[in-house]
Length: 370
Image (cartoon, rainbow, N blue to C red):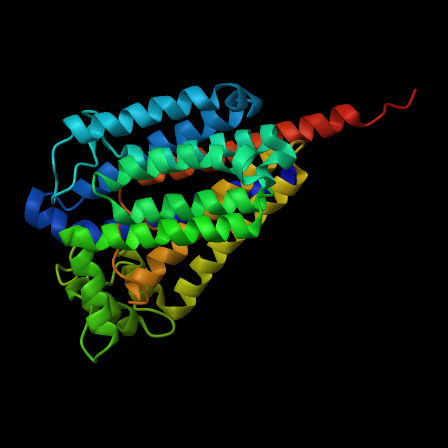
């Protein structure tokens, strides 16, 4: 278990170091133009990384059993925070998603993803075989899923809503829910999601531009067009770290959701493939830790958190390459942004906690020879 934990930490550190270098490269020109300081956004990113690492360490040291006891309280608090966001958060680009905490703008929907996974894992463990019964088990978990997803949808934040639903139904299925229940419910929810997607102007425009772009030789939008140019410019080996041309204000917000294109330009196809392999390795190690966990709660939580990381990474890469409509899903541990990197680091801290305390439990069970 120690080797798995060390490997997980090492891979995450590699991603954060690489992300810092890419943010420095991708944000330099924008920082100089807007803030008259080449390193303005880079310094901001580093400060958030330090906060994220501190929270990772703290979370890893707390016995994960404690979260089982207070998961419902934490989820209710998170729901209240989501509700407060709708009421008090200022609208940015037509959406109220961020709460200003002075030192950082916090996005509660990011936290809601992992807190919901945590409580679903608790419920599945408590329900046991009843999770296979729609009326007496499965339906009770849906109440929390719909409350969280509904509040996020009202911001509006369609992409995160869909991600929350995918993660929730995945952990329910892995936890023992019947496939027909998951399929039927997800089909209904998916239909409702598409309806709401077409109601909101920003999401409708993204979907229609994606369909129009996919159905012709045109481009989905300016960001995807410039992102593809960046990826194509990188070739197989890339142009080298710090040598990106697309980040010189050609690609809007290249340091954020579209940083994967700068990665592909500077490190090439080989570098982009290696980074995706690292994400897969983080997921695979998380699954191994989940298998070694001492209880269903630890197993499900470790799996759900690991799946969130790899799913977010591959969705981000799919957006940048024009395979799916544009979303606001960040590249884990690499994209610029406070809430994202903090929540993903907390996720890793939880996985490490599960690994550490499962190892302690296993050692206690080993008989001592006298």
